[in-house]
Image 1 (cartoon, rainbow, N blue to C red):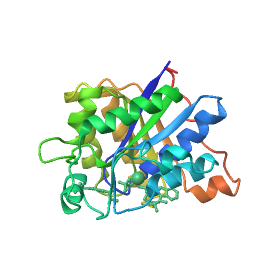
Image 2 (image 1 turned 30 degrees about the vertical axis):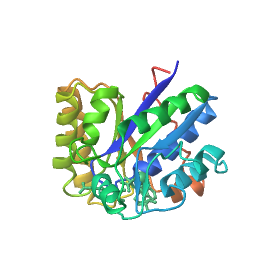
Image 3 (image 1 turned 135 degrees about the vertical axis):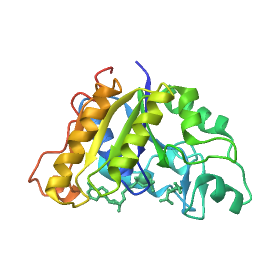
Length: 231
Ligand SMILES: Nc1ncnc2c1ncn2[C@@H]1O[C@H](COP(=O)(O)OP(=O)(O)OP(=O)(O)O)[C@@H](O)[C@H]1O
Ligand SMILES: C[C@H](N)[C@H](N)CCCCCC(=O)O
Ligand SMILES: [Mg+2]
């Protein structure tokens, strides 16, 4: 079965790229033909820096399709929202081009892990928000959040938006990389779990730890059990 999952986050720099790389690694280990895609990369002119991190975490070299524009159809030089980055580079974003790139990837792979830029309400153009694109495509979401102060508000708003747009939330990734008072970290995670259930999202809440702990062998790489049940 061919499937696209969108890995989104409550904000920029929350750990989407790290989560995508680790998920692709886990699916690869299960023998699933998986590829990652970045919808739009801003603040970069050569190869998408998020794709480079995905490949490193997957333990593979850059692919030809990474050097072409398939795994990241839009690259813009200024590190800002896609709509503004496109304007500043004198270009426009055609969402059809993003969709066609995903379709081409699906011809070769069974699963595409599709990473957004920033959060759900980031504009792709003056008129189209990223959530509008996701609603049209009906991709299940995997939301990356964490214990950082301010995340309760951002996370509940993101989950609420997903529900209003009739999008499935397959999992919430709780990125423990961001250090926070343990009482806050425990409480926020409970709030997220309860709010997911209240909104009919039955997927798991999965902890992510600092990458160094996986690399040095103190904990095993995550297998994301329960996230990709449909595969
Ligand atoms: N679990 C983690 N272990 C180690 N480093 C992490 C972890 N999570 C995030 N980071 C670091 O935090 C920074 C931001 O993470 P990341 O690039 O994954 O964010 P993002 O949500 O993909 O941002 P963007 O919106 O730009 O795509 C990076 O330097 C990344 O290496
Ligand atoms: C450059 C940055 N790291 C992201 N790729 C783009 C984040 C856009 C966020 C826009 C916003 O929500 O204000
Ligand atoms: Mg990223």
